[in-house]
Length: 174
Image (cartoon, rainbow, N blue to C red; front, side, top):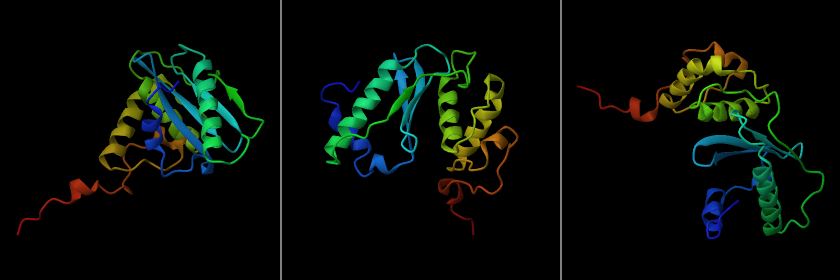
């Protein structure tokens, strides 16, 4: 739930974006200041999904809050009555489950990545070491690997990615 007085700050995040023109919207949620979960709004299929790799909460209050926010934004954009037929879905069995107490951020990031491609969430705790390396490479190259998520498990270096601009703009020695 957005706290009183924070609505203007929240609007700042999407002021130049019509969220209703998107196919999907991913929203990270920090649960009780210690665990990260994910909400995905799928505009094409009219569903709001909640993903919790730790299975700590069913996400009902976050799903409700997201639906209320969407309705409020729809009204604010003067598009009339919010479309009917929207559903919500809490964490399901296909959501990868973490076994550690520290990998929720990685689970969140790669769930969003896989879902953005429409791929199944077929990674597990056993893939975390590799996915940490994958994320490090993406950060160092300032670009997210755009190949099939299924191949992310086998990709250790992506030569098609160029180094980040900062790394390649070192002055040359004459």
